[in-house]
Image 1 (tube, rainbow, N blue to C red):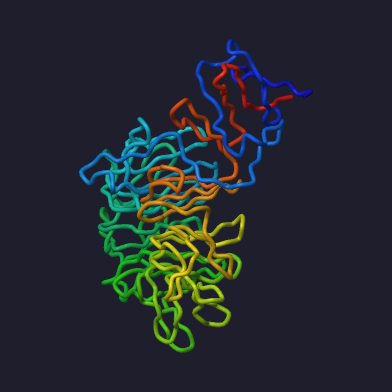
Image 2 (cartoon, rainbow, N blue to C red; image 1 turned 45 degrees about the horizontal axis):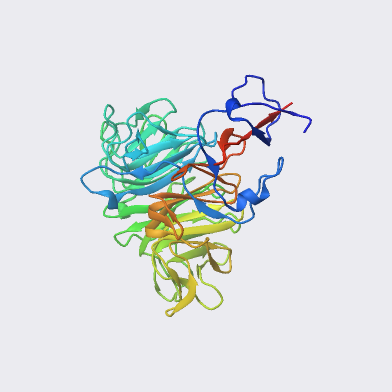
Amino acid sequence: MDKLIKNIFGEKKEHKLELGVKKLTRKNTCKGNYYVEKNFFTTFIKKSNFSNNIPIYTKFAQDIDIVNDFGPNTLAIKAMVIDKLGRLYIGGEFNKIGDLVCNNIAMWDGTKWFSLEKGITGQVLTLTIDSSNNLYVGGGFGGTETIQSSNIIKWNGIKWESLDGGVDYNVNIVSTLPSGKIVIGGSFTTSITSGTPLQKIAIWDGYNWVNIGADFLNDKSIYGLAVDSKLNKIYIGGYNYLPVSVLDVSTNVWSTLSDSNSNILNQVVNTIIIDKLSGNPVFGGIIENFGTITGVFNVISFNLSTNTWVPFTNSQGFGLDNQCFKLFYDDINKKIIAGGTFYQLTNGTDSSTFLKKVATWNGLDWSPIGEGINGSYVESFALQPDGTLFIGGSILGSENLWSNGLVIYTNNYVNIRDKKNLLYTLTDYNKSITISNNSGSKYIFQKVIE
């Protein structure tokens, strides 16, 4: 290799980011007795050739823990989002990651976990990033230890900011509008500081809450919300027999989503997304047959071109056998990912296709993701540009992996272990790390510079 492979302790300016492998003596490296776990990745180690064709589930080195009156069974990662700098934020019900006290929210920068001051005083249900890379956090909480902003709060990258004191009841979903403003949905009826009346859905204009709800929402609760940026519409669904409805943002007019036979979906809708290939809204929840629509198994879309409801079932009529908590669009593979409590496919009779809490929809059929997830439910996803998928919920890992609340599904990985424990999972190969095998010889994965 003509390029200089530089020890990680050097100071020369890096010009080209690649990875090299070099055997070094113990005196030239940091202390420790680490080694690469024998996995598929190690059979492909060559200069600048770090690839593995078989995706696996893996985990972060530090365990996510909960220490409160509810006990460990309440631990869940309920929301995730990746910002414009590639940092992963997770929210839910947890108190610690390893030795880091983080209280229901934390950030992973690609190398380590960080707390956001002392965290949030209650459960986090939803996260979004605005056009300025600010993080908005919604859920059921009073704010932080020092700032009151009930159920909705902003992290500007340095500190927490109150949004008119927050709102009076839970914020179940927060999303970003094309304008860069945010919209929230939930069970709330008023803002805390100004007392602005709100009807379960509102826009934050940067200074105040603006009510965009209508009277039909007064006794309802919104759980699913999706913004169609091309058509400038907002779709909502939820509980208490709330009919799936759509707001035309340009005219501020609400309408009920209905086909030509007046079929209206007013069952439990937990999640809504826009299918980026078709442009159609997709709804997930506890959804069965309604009106004249049959063969419905918990996920259904509305075809805007034909004005028809279309269940997500394959050619044999098989769909998800239990409820869907989260739908997520995979921009890389152009597929829809679903998470929930479902276990396998069914058309009234269970099939032999097992999904175990996670699945992908390719437009024609459902497929499992690896061997599936162990635990109670999957409720959150995030996707890195390299295809690494983060899966969160009330989970215990996968078939061959123990991991509280959060797992990674990736084909880009190196597991770094000591003799007993998984210490670190390296998924970003622009990072440097020094490891050794048990014989004492050292290997360094590092940046190659000119």
